[in-house]
Amino acid sequence: MGLHPTVTLTDQRGSNPKDEPPKPLKCCYIDRRTEFFSLLSKKLGSDFVLVPVRRGSAGDREQLANCDVIIISFPARSHPSFPSSLSQLQQLVSNPQVAPIVALLASPDREVMHLALANGAYDQFVENGPLDELRVVLRRAARYRELMLELDRLRASPARLSDFESVVGTDPRMREILEFARKVAQTDTTVLITGESGTGKELMARALHQNSPRKAHSLVAVACSSLPETLIESELFGHEKGAFTGAIATRPGRFEAVGRGTIFLDEVGDSAPTLQVKLLRVLQERTFERLGSNKPRAMEARIICATNRNLKELVAAGTFRLDLYYRLNTVEIQLPPLRERQRDISLLAHTFLHTYATRHKRPVARISHAAICALEEHSWPGNVRELENVIERAVVVCDRAEIGIQDLPSELTGHAGESQPTTFEEEVREFKRRLIARALEANGNNKMRAALSLKMPRSSLHRLIGELNISDLGPQDEPETTDIPDPTIQ
Image (cartoon, rainbow, N blue to C red; front, side):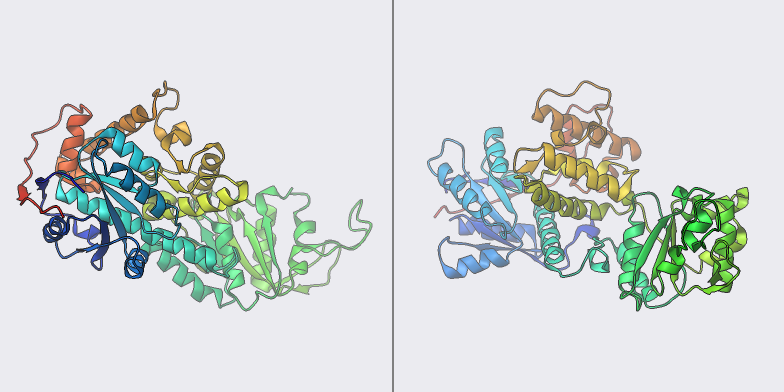
């Protein structure tokens, strides 16, 4: 293609080692300028392998199927080859298995940027932009590819919702918790699952049961806070005929009905004092009695409890029995809040996206960068349950192939109670201003630390500070620049 004959790329040294990929990223490019891309490959370094692709051959189709990122060059809007580039992008995007596509633009033409993204490009990069920013764009696209492959694996898995494989996450801390839970599942020990509301405590309890020797038996879930104090004993332990007014027949309780299965006591921290006394006796003696009967019955079930309350604080306040706390807390599994699993937000969001797009028969297939940034910036007081609700709502209201930040609730975009920007472009600009201003304030206006916290190149932060008119900042460091010689256009 006839793009710029001379390209100047800025290289910001000293990238964050945590962002380094474990292996070189294979990036297939669709462009006839092999010399230019050969020079660009050298400038990018050994972490990137740029491979030319000629559309149509079997070998190149295999290359496209196995690469991490695809790069398509876009000339100026007025260039004769522009329609061909746009057509190539549309054809590739029509294949759901294709790697994410990065549009390499000849110039920062907003119309071309919008066309590329609207037609399915994952991201875009201007040829005379900084090299460190291109590295970030390619790595981010490759990370998205990994998330989509993980999502495909989960969707193709025969595992049910109660299996550990359905507990979506790549966060190292969550993986450690799941490995520990797999070991605990094989035993009969009492388990206490703690964590904030919406972190998936019931899902974890069902996974423990499904992976235990008791999986052939029932799992019965009981919300302790929902049991009226007058019915606690009857509901859990059953009653004999005539035990109280209205008891016209003998009725087994939950502990008896579950047999050798698992009983899951949710919200155990909110249980009434009378229930705490009876639970303690069941755990100590492994027996219970029906209401109106003196005959002890063996308790064969395994007990798993969950709470979003701090039981130690409740014990100190005198509202929860210390002896019961020790009985319940044989093994504790603490689920982290979503704000501490930021790496999993994108994967979880796309998991819910595909689930609800299928369920509601909506055209949505992906989430924009701006929307992902908004999701990752949110503190998620409702955790995974809140994220699921947000994505379902966005799927329902979005009539396009891509969820944008305009499809998210106002509390995620920072406009609750304020007048909304009138256009999508203003919305994106305002979001970037808030995100960068917060990062600078949190890092004492140190632009290097702010750039690292935002996981973006320092040169990109400098550029955005100027573009967004963010003031009261310290002096800016000039990035090192290096020129790529004139490539030969084939």
